[in-house]
Image 1 (cartoon, one colour):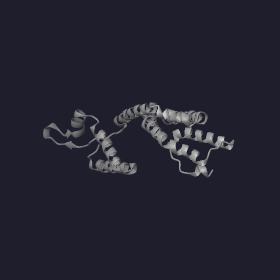
Image 2 (cartoon, one colour):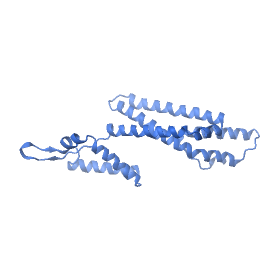
Image 3 (cartoon, one colour):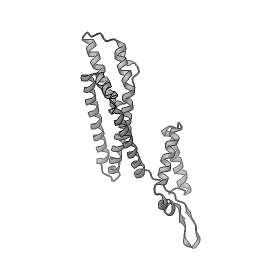
Image 4 (cartoon, helix red, strand yellow):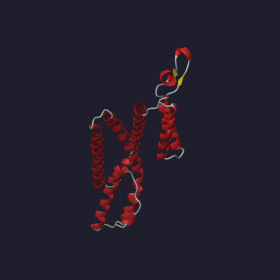
Length: 215
């Protein structure tokens, strides 16, 4: 127990193979094999970083945004299948990864996992997942980010000129949501936390709505 109280941090989806390998090592040690504390901790610490990058890319960049884009659209219509379906599908994906990766680590050992990491296939998977994740997030921005101007410029007898419908929607529809997304991304790259960015967006929305700048 003391041995496993040391620092260990990785993506929860891919922690299972590491725990499987660790359990196999502990079992061998309990059966009399000469395995010291350093070897067991070295396996955990050495694998948690590379696997965390894989889990973050595939889960945070592809699976979760893809499922959310699908089931949020269903939930927006008032269908209860939206939230329930997301929970079921996400849980099924999560538990399948848990089980099969745990069995891989326990039965095949760290060598099998390292061979997968060193084969180059993981890099190809991460690259493909990154591209797909960017595509999914781009679709989410187009579908769910909504920002419109409410400014009307009086033009005399011809009536008011609406900046949103007669300018932005004509030249480049979706420009303002794109700028809002890129601006939020820029602020987060500058070190802003997501909470601060959300707070700024809410403040701009409130002030812009009260002044009639935003529709």
